[in-house]
Length: 345
Image 1 (cartoon, helix red, strand yellow):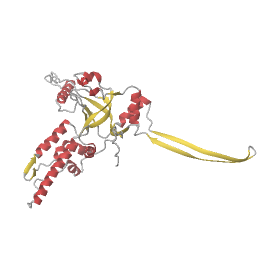
Image 2 (tube, helix red, strand yellow):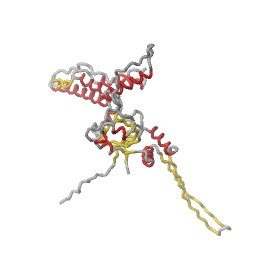
Image 3 (cartoon, helix red, strand yellow):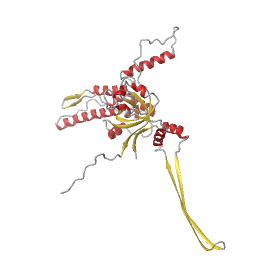
Image 4 (cartoon, rainbow, N blue to C red):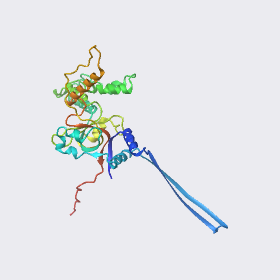
């Protein structure tokens, strides 16, 4: 039996796919059982006294948590699902152009590989906590040495506190403001201990700002196969989906920042495109009117170039992206080599 610990499930997509495969989705099942007993006394058909008694049991099972396993099994039975865990572990699969041949966009796949979780919000929170701890340690040491403790420059108020003071701001606007100002949670005061600079606070802000630019705030999963010259598999996890309702701090405290095996089931999203020729950027017509089609192509070409340079949230060669329906890890597996019993005496 496989026990799945889900990190992410796109329930709407799972229901839609399962409905196409099974002509609808059963949300619940009701099982009704009846037991009874009859006894009688007297002469049959003339004088007979009878009595019946029994009980009825009704059990209703919800299927919301088993929809994805049903979909995964149905895809396997239909021969639609391909497990590519071995494919991405072969060096020849990562030769130029090979992945595009093996895994065209839209192919339904399952892959298990070491993966890293990335979230700019966690980095901002961690560095803000680090800055606060260093500032507090400096003040403690000053107090122990008998010196006067100076508050110095007031630390920046975290974005969440700032947003709470604005009664006119909606929750959506506040969330967007916070995402665009993650580095503001790091105070600009000097980070020193024993009058020695530890690190420049502006450097910490720059690190958060860089990650915010490379990885849009939100949870990203990057699968990195352990094979030479392999690419990375990008898995963007959309906010608001099932199971993805944990704060970043709690999420990383549970799963850590190192690589561990994750299983992703979904469809191949896209492969990186070759660098475009950006010299042809004329999207104006002869009479000074913007050609919307040309401009759209130019914007996409510019995004392609930035993605290939690692400066946009797009797959980078020789990797590719997966549109996830579910992300989980398998738990409860028995030990392969159980410890031997300790012999007494």
